[in-house]
Length: 501
Image 1: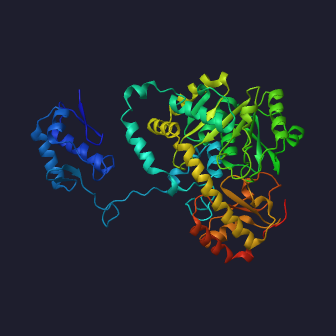
Image 2: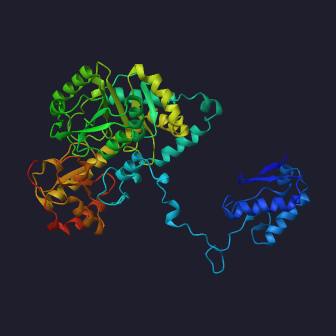
Image 3: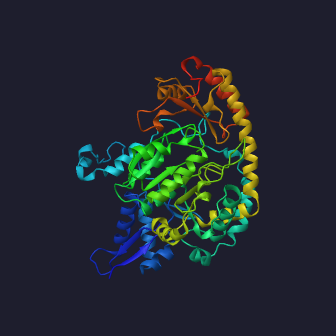
């Protein structure tokens, strides 16, 4: 039976000692093929000749002969005291080298097309506007203010406790101490009295919503969503076969009465009641009660997206809907990306008690669980009070930045813009007069080095209104001032609407 060795780069080389081809030629051809096809990348280190020979069951002299031959051929290079490495190949496009062209016709077959859901998913993404932290990009925390030293210290302390046993025993729903810390935080900050076993750790709110849809939606089920609303929400619903039913939003949030009168009975209702995205409205108390009543009578589930409730600047926090839901029809969804780092892919769901085992089992099918070491560090971060301290510090910092940006916008466009004075969140909204092309305005701003997100793409119906979203959380005083100076240079091109909508 042919024997196979695994190189240091995990590329297998097979040898048939009973074959007609000499063994050293088989090894040489196998390595050459691996190098030329890219299975062994340039710079890859090969195992020592002794280890390679033992794996293949051949003499070390045979492997030495192979290495020497491939070194002479320019495929390998030996470095004294370091070992043998794959050398950079000759430019395959150099004159005289054969080039295999891949013509468009080779991939034009309809059998290679994306699914309808795949095409819809690609269409929902946009790369037109920069996502880098450039004034005034919305929805970004200040990366420079993240307490990296405290985090690294906790990482160093925690990593020593990470064992194989912990890896094997951690629940599919996530690291238990972190789930307990989240349950305690939600009880104190959001009025949600839940057991830690109802908390399911996810890799962010996007995955959380996807898991909810997989668990509760069948193809063709109606889902009520806010209009305007977060684009990612409707993309995930459609990807899971749900029918998106837009519900208009006004100054008091989700217009539940309109939905009851005009739309089919929903399976899910997706709302952001603490701060509607992107308008910033809070869902009125009467509408909250009406929403819970509709859910209880119809058998629908409410998905409460509480994406940035931590940043409240004026007044008292309104408790989460989940905390008032006696019928247990609400699934609460939170994320740490807005509070800590965008790349910090940890979020969570709070599911009804009778669903906790089902969601934990389904979580394992999706991807087992999120990064365990990050869960462990975050647990310590919360237990030691560092999370609450960070939120308080950022809340004060963001409030000052909000006030600076608001004053600058009012100086340029005049006061009286209701939507530009939110008491929470990380962005301001400047309404534009009806008929303005906010996408074109945002594009012209980008040409001048400003990132302003247009409002109209967040609408799904002909109720679309133009506006511009200004983020302030990620930018310090000097950056906001510089951004306002840039904005003033084309102020006359922006037809702002000073009156309330």
